[in-house]
Every structure is written in structure tokens, then in C-alpha cells.
Length: 186
Figure 1 (tube, helix red, strand yellow):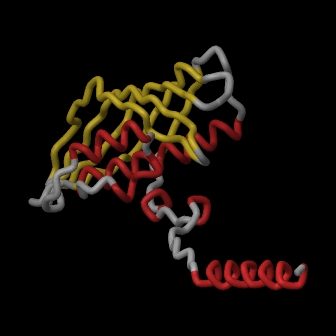
Figure 2 (cartoon, rainbow, N blue to C red; figure 1 turned 180 degrees about the horizontal axis):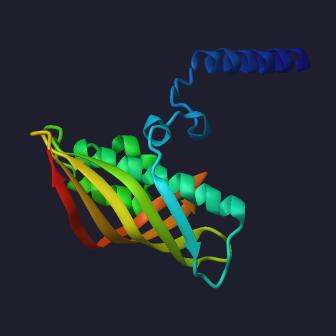
């Protein structure tokens, strides 16, 4: 009798092993830390940073913030010309991304190209746990290239709220307080 129970057990185990071998996990998505972000790599604006917060971040935290802030603007500039928010999903919080995705209307690519030239960041609040940051970009400079070949340069004051999620800073809220056009040229 025990021989039949043992053979039944081996049969069930063998059946489960064969069944599990046929199930294939076809998740082809590369983990976040192995992804190559060409937009962020090709963007290199000048970033000046001042801290006016009660809690002072470390040099490593500030360096990470500078790099991620430049990457966020690379993705915002990409969105300015290409209305699809999907490639920039990892640079925005879920709430911000859902607002972009809900307002996304499929259409033609934009004709105006925007590039950020420099940023002057003033950190107003830095959380004790290092996961939240509110800042003012007091002298953000942008270059706009139009289809006729003309270029405009503008300067803006921008309020930004960032959250540290996963391995990088993500944009949670942004508001342009003031933007002035500096010059027109052909």
C-alpha cells in the first residue's frame, strides 16, 4: 500500500514539474537600473544650486538632485515636441504622469523645439528623510527653435516640487511663475 502512495506522490510531483516547465515567463522589460536614458545623457544644462532650507542635504544628495533635475527637463523638453508621455514615465510621479496621460491626445509631432540652457535652483524645503524637495528655479533659461529657423531665448521663474521615488527624483508639480522673452533672432 505504501508503495502505491509513494508512486502516486512521484506521479503528482512529476506532473507538476512538467507543467511548471511549460509555463514561460516572457517579461522582456529591462529593470529600471539597467535602462539607458538617452534623453538624460544628451542633456547638459548649467545648474547652479543654493540651499535655503532648515535641513541641509549632503553633497551626494545635491549631486543626485542636479543630475535628476537636468534629466527631468530633458524629458519635459521631449514632451514639448513629442506629445507622447510614455518614454518619460520614470521621471514623473504617478499622479503627475496620470494627468499627462489623461490629457494626451494623439497627434502630429510639434514643430517648436525647446532646449533648457541653464537653471539657478534655490532649495526652499528639504525633508529630513531626503525624499521630498521644494525649490524655485529663479533663472531658468530656454531656447526655442521655430520651423522658420528663428530662435527665441526666454528666462523664467519656476516653482517645482520633487519626490524621491525608486532610484531618482521625480517631478510631482511644476508652475511657471513668470517667463519673459529675452531676444529674437533668425
